[in-house]
Amino acid sequence: TTNTEAVTTAFAEVSSGHQAASGSCLVYDTNAKRFVLIFKDGDNSNYGTAIVVEINTSNFSLSYGSPVVFHSASIGNVKRSACFDSSNNKVVVVYTDSASDDGQVKVGTVDPSDNSISFGSAVEYAGSDNSSTPSICYDSTNNKFVIVYTGDYGGSNVGQAIVGTVSGTSTSFGTASVYNSSQEFGAGEVIYDSTNNKTVFLYSDYADGEKGKARVVSISGTSISYGTEVTFESQK
Image 1 (cartoon, rainbow, N blue to C red):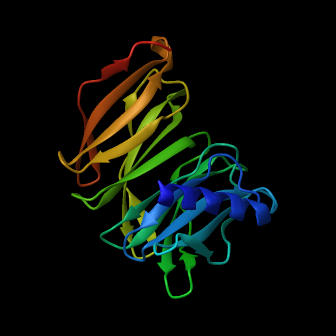
Image 2: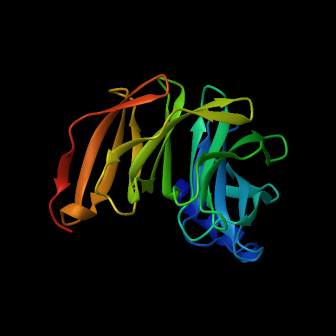
């Protein structure tokens, strides 16, 4: 509980100098033992910004690095998402460029000596109209990350997923595939089950009364295969 309160305080203090808009996220770097806060800075043209947060576990005080702009343009009103690649000790950030609607990824490296973070070049995983509400998780068995998002496929916005690989400070991707062909928007969430070595997608099916649904996902290389769709919540 105390740790949670400390992280909440981090949000409040960062917001006082740099307006962290809704949709911000935290990711923990297990190598550097630091949190990284990813946010849209409302005091700086809604640029995509990151800041390293250190928690002193003896008294739960907080210290910060300097805010770092990872995307010098607005990253839109949709959520940001990030994961930690433990095989490469990198933070992977997925976001949307609001000017182009392109889905982009950047790889960050945390330096715990001065609580700084640096980023490689942006890599596009989805083109225009293919990047709404991205969510990302890391598969520690396959050393890959998975992005789920809603994007255009054959003229319709549907749920899609793509597998990525970190190399240095860049990324490469497999081919995107559709996991729900009737989903209009709102890609939901993706999580990794380390016990069963599977990735799970959770989302709302807007063509079926906005029911909550889930699919178990298996990864082979950069390819994805899907289990049967299951309804976990029958109400809207």
